[in-house]
Amino acid sequence: MTNPIARIVVVGATSAIAQHTLRAWLAGRDASAHLIGRSESRLASVEADLRVRFPGSTFSHEAVDLIDVEAIERVADHETANGDPDIVLIAHGSLTSQTDSQKNLRAASEQLIATGVSPALWLEAFADRMTTGTLAVIGSVAGDRGRRSNYLYGAGKGLIERVTQGLQNRFEGTDLHVVLIKPGPTRTPMTEHLAVAGARLADVHLVAEGIAHAVTRNKRVAYVPRRWGVIMAVVRSIPAPVFNRLDL
Ligand SMILES: NC(=O)c1ccc[n+]([C@@H]2O[C@H](COP(=O)([O-])OP(=O)(O)OC[C@H]3O[C@@H](n4cnc5c(N)ncnc54)[C@H](OP(=O)(O)O)[C@@H]3O)[C@@H](O)[C@H]2O)c1
Image (cartoon, rainbow, N blue to C red; front, side, top):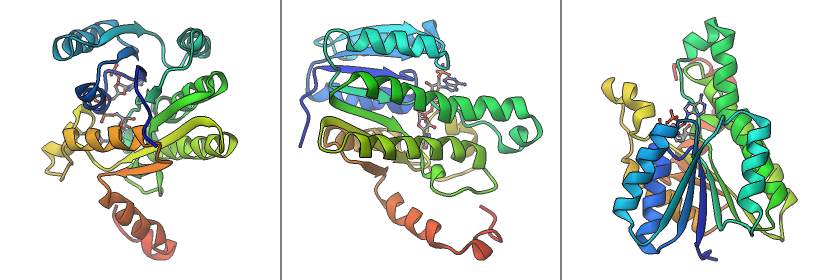
């Protein structure tokens, strides 16, 4: 079933994928959107851009420490005080160097918290306060199987997957829907270094269209682009003795 959209909350709203997903939603209808992130100046510039693109919609923004538990609870309280948002999209994450994180536990900790723990806490905070609407979070194909090149980032995404599975089980049969999005490699500022190295990356517009579609249709899990569902089924099925010899 397609949800009507009147009010959207985006956590990690400065993300390129989140911005393009918002644009996909607002291209079809006017709505209000509250943009949450860690940088006041970056949020203000995202909001200014959206105001020009979508004059019929209304926007606000709020800079908070995305890993501060009290801030998460305060924002979730405020955003649900006068009724549930139609969509909450949680989009932030941090892809830093795996080898740097292996050598520096502080970097590893920051990556795990920014990519896994913080989005999980935002999910919990909204799940506990909402009874209707859609709670969507951006995971990754990297969360499907640990591999040497990005397993700490993947572990953060795997944590999100377990939380969304639990929430989907908890809210089954209710009017609150929980959606896990798993993009494949996509061209955004996060992957600029991969683009420079010649990696094949999906177009962010197409990925955002896929996310907007999956969220409004309350898909439980959506790989975007869809071919990644097949690719990851193969990757998950490779026996460990073979998989561990691959340089992935
Ligand atoms: N691009 C891909 O290939 C790909 C593939 C699968 C999944 N994803 C996921 O898609 C989501 C959006 O990423 P994107 O591709 O749109 O990249 P992006 O444009 O670089 O956005 C990253 C977002 O995460 C925030 N962020 C980064 N480090 C943070 C930290 N330590 N604490 C709090 N927030 C932090 C950024 O905030 P600031 O603007 O304040 O820095 C920004 O909002 C992420 O969850 C990412 O893991 C991306």
